[in-house]
Length: 323
Picture 1 (cartoon, one colour):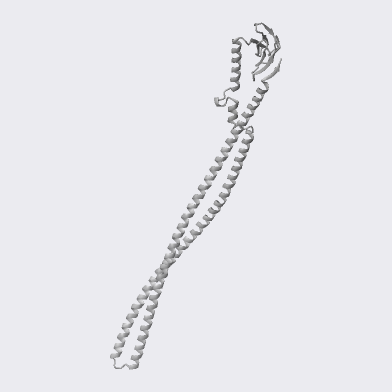
Picture 2 (cartoon, rainbow, N blue to C red):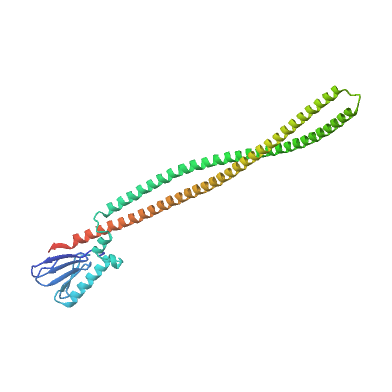
């Protein structure tokens, strides 16, 4: 029969002995100064060494308390039972005071831990809600960035098309300038021819002065028309060059702006993705920590419950009364 606690009986009646003791129970006759220790056998041994049959499993042996060997035996037995009670507990947790200190002297330790778990769980729920709320605007921002990138791509394509159109227009203007130059040269030739004709008419005595006046008028008109055409062509060329230059500058600025916006959007998308990854990792780490803490707390609560039961049993068995 295993020894679970040290239990005591006492009497002050001379000559009285217990009829039986459980294993581990101790009885004292304070008048005779005799100690009786239950050994779990079915044999009762008195101080003189005589033995009698007792109740199976409930025998005891008696020792004179004045004999040092009996005291040593009792001390050894007591030390053994205390060692069994402490078992393999570390030195800093082998007394009731140390156990109480380890529990923070909190008689409601289980309730305190339960409340702590509840607080941690509440914090986890709050963190999940915060992370979820943060992910929603991130997703919205990513969607907006995607739309902006698509729009920027379309704008870039439009700008490329406009640049191509401007290049075509500039080439056309160059052709027109070449054509106008040819026309000017032709007009110069015609003027020279007209001048020659005038000179010829002037030297011809058969030409009437009216024809000369008419030719002079025609020549003046032609000169005025040619001059006006040349001026209009020069103005048109100047205006086209200015328009093409302004358009090219605008297109270059728009392309640079779009490129900057695309780079910014790409950086924002990368940042948002990193934030989402970090939030997911933190949530998983918190969940794992809470699970580990819950397991440790449950284990500690079980150990504390067992220890409390054990202490209650020991306290209840210290004094069994008299015999």
